[in-house]
Length: 426
Ligand code: AMP
Ligand code: GLY
Image (cartoon, rainbow, N blue to C red; front, top):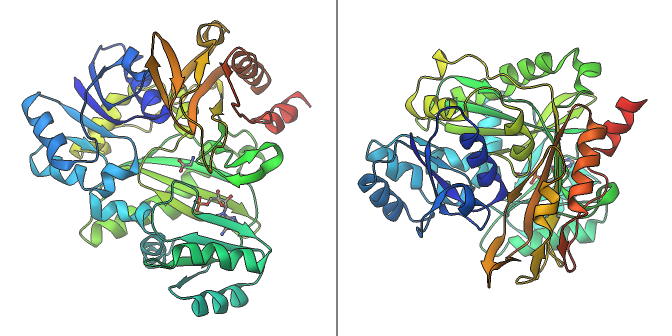
């Protein structure tokens, strides 16, 4: 197939690497891509957020499937423009992407579908925020209603800080004040063709910047998959996945279809396992980053077949995707100043030594070629991804590899998959 992947992050690089690992070779294009993606795909100077530009290009270049990586093109209506021209596209249209684009929309869909989630109050003024904070009590959870790249959320017991965070988004916008939920978090992805859903294997993301879940929220600083500790709570990973498929994914997909906005693409359920059951914290309308970097390397079935089946509405004919038992750990290398004010333009080296470590590969995010070398061009620079037979092995490989990489001021967490590795050792 001729496949175009839109986006320029490590998630898109992971998707491209999965497509390349298939037995059947594909012609893979990426727009705009990055320095790492350029080694594995033909990059195109195309504005991925411009529906007309993308549709025109695809129409004249015999592309069989378009895979939309990030949320921005979805919300911009790129999938709609492609579908109007009859081009198979993996990614929801603008209306269904509101599941991610608007937290208030997502809450309404969940209520209508009877999906378990925390209580939330939609507030549009300081007075409404204050009433909601007092009604739901501390710790306070305040979320910007629109897209905020994982940075629009604050969780704090400090009422003044919660109010100040809300006030940043109130001019011209609104916020959700949510009930605080406590428990381990799980990211679970579902392929959807608008009607049928097929689950992938769960992963855990590390959202905070620093070890021990300290520091500000980020887009995600590391991840691992699978989650062996689900067995103790639910009997098996499969039992957990079945439960979430039945109580979360299927009702939401049915609700969106009933409203005339079918969801074709990747439904990302951000879940929290509370004493009161599994609840939804958020939905995204695309693959998670960095979770994709640990889920796709474990996928046994060819990714292209799954994405195409979702795009053309034949997921019902496809069995549930199978995953290898291997463990996968990814650690994100971020620039100094991330997430508030990342410093760009610094030299990046040691990548060959990193990939020389057994079981390790890299997924590039913000990298570019300059003067024959590589530079970091933004916040999350790249992911080291390591596979192993145990989490101890995968973790050891990932940290040996990242230790080979030099980036002045670079930051990464040292505790990714530490707890799960300690549990398996004991
Ligand atoms: P979100 O962008 O909605 O995924 O929120 C980012 C992070 O904030 C989540 O991964 C949680 O760690 C935390 N968070 C969000 N909502 C809640 C909640 N209702 N209760 C507790 N923590 C939350
Ligand atoms: N890792 C969180 C996200 O992709 O939104």
